[in-house]
Length: 227
Image (cartoon, rainbow, N blue to C red):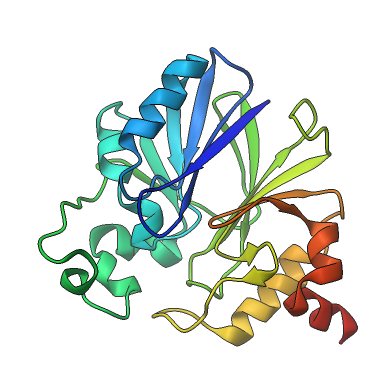
């Protein structure tokens, strides 16, 4: 399995590309601000054909380029219904105005094809089996995407694309519209802590980590485990 990623031009948002192997179809996860050129290079380098876009949640720094990525290829964007409205109106997920963030008109559009994710569903896309876990707290529609890790560069049983639920050493903020600290702690307890220690975590921002590393060193998980 091929998994590669790179940071967007703004906010340090990680965009990931996942495929069964080079020369195959692929999935694009969280195409943020200014990713089009880097994404084109990754697709060309590995001879990949996008089959769908997966969104871990609806915040603009993760969805900014979803319309051009999907529109250029006629593919579908997948998002949880809890964050569906942010694809049409990204202001709903922000505590400041778009003008304040970008200094003027934002060239953003909703993708034409959108499908909604459900908790516990398994998506069969691009030759991959992707399990969806609804993990609200950062936003109402935040999800995790889990894939078998066998054959990847980590040779682990599982890879988890965690969006802004879990970071290396921290968790996503809960003070934006739709966020909830109580709900986040429930998601961490019910969706993150049960994962195996060797699960590789690819977060929405920052470096990769593992569940075992976070269980031992992440203060939020450590406190939950202790309680």
